[in-house]
Amino acid sequence: MFSAGKYEEIHSLKMGIIYDKIARKKFTKEEILQRESDIINALDFKLEVPSVYDIARHVIGNLFFI
Image 1 (cartoon, rainbow, N blue to C red):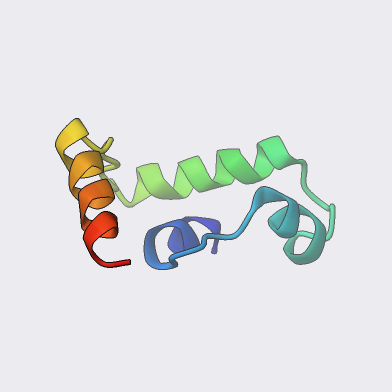
Image 2 (spheres, one colour):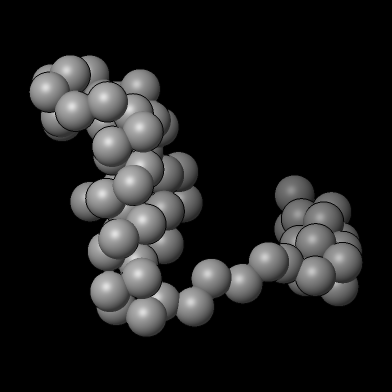
């Protein structure tokens, strides 16, 4: 749920909400992050870091569409 929200949602879930409301404090925050990492690795998901070009395109695009 945490990984999917980060990929699909505009505003992803915060760790506090995952920890308090979804996991109901039954897992530590470190365990939640470790399981997320396990799922991402099992699916062979490729995470990419945005380039300077991507950031500039986003900032310039927001300036013209306000």
